[in-house]
Image 1 (cartoon, rainbow, N blue to C red):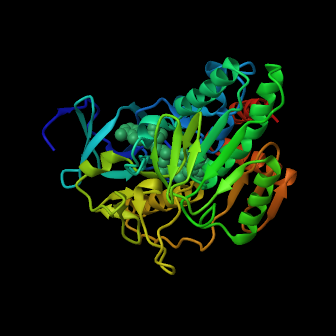
Image 2: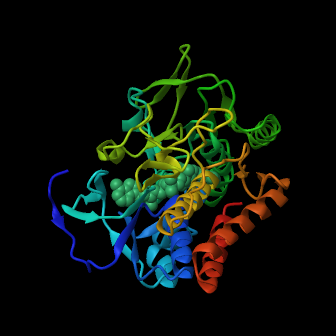
Image 3: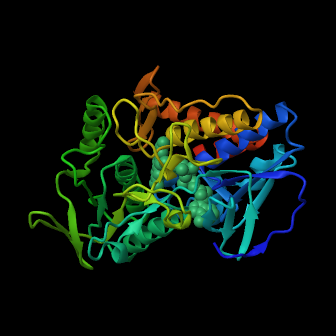
Length: 422
Ligand SMILES: Cc1cc2nc3c(=O)[nH]c(=O)nc-3n(C[C@H](O)[C@H](O)[C@H](O)COP(=O)(O)OP(=O)(O)OC[C@H]3O[C@@H](n4cnc5c(N)ncnc54)[C@H](O)[C@@H]3O)c2cc1C
């Protein structure tokens, strides 16, 4: 890494940098802050949270944003129900610092991180939690023509485009969603009500829109247990979503999605929810990467001495199954908790703990309207109860990261808007 402009800051306290304010980064940040505060160590260490955005994105509700009619809420109104200002999260962590920078490189030997602005920051410890980016797998025409669903702006753009096309004419709208993982399933199911609500509002005739979910693997929701897949399948069928499995997309023209085996599907809107990969910035981190571009970590989640990688950035094989861990919030959070614990253990000279992931992770899969399939390992619910559980899990998370009144306000706001199309 070349010598950049060193950022001006007091030299006394050593830095613990958390790169990325997503689920992993925020959890690591809050856990570290609390642990260091409890031990009176904040005089020796300054925790610096770095993100290129000023907000924390609550991705599990992105599918809702893409399916809320513009008449109910424009982008400005919707944003606070899913984008949590980082300054609100830092309100209870005096002494910690927020840095709005884009990370472009890291030097593990000199322990420095470099930003797109040209600045550099030295650190004693780092937690890398920069998340993932959409992977179009070089499928011809896909990146140019499909709508990704990864950011708040992606969701709003998709919603606006659907409405534009519906407002233009009464023709049956054909939406194809590539990728039958949780994001694709949630989106397909949620679109059903949204499209019918729109049709009704526009007085544009019967709701006959076509939603097709296309999955390359032999079954949707790969990795989920069979009972869950069966339930989700039943629900999608009832909602009228067409599901095609074992049919990888091989190419996309302006009007047609081409599938392996020669099948063609005409479309008006193509959404790509078929894959992500660890963010490309990791290529410049001087660390060992796996074939997908994730950072290989040891049993303590360390990629190099005092440098931890977590969440969608970490490449960690389950000790029993030797399979990679799924890219989801519970994994990111539990890795974050362990990375924070190990940094504190290292500082106070105690033994660090190895990561012992469970064999099953909790999940909640929303499948249209007020219906969700939830498996929190100790309790399972589906239908309306599953949906209630989903709301409570969201509230619990907001209470972890925000002061009580802000958490409650944000939760109520999200529930209000998310039920406007049900
Ligand atoms: C549409 C969608 C729906 C999902 N739904 C669910 C769900 O219902 N349940 C579930 O468990 N999981 C869900 N996931 C997966 C889940 O969001 C991720 O696994 C989880 O967010 C990973 O956490 P993370 O901390 O590794 O990364 P993220 O939460 O993605 O955070 C990464 C952070 O790094 C920042 N960043 C990235 N690059 C840079 C850079 N170069 N410089 C500075 N900052 C940067 C980003 O702004 C972001 O704040 C969903 C994902 C998507 C895309």
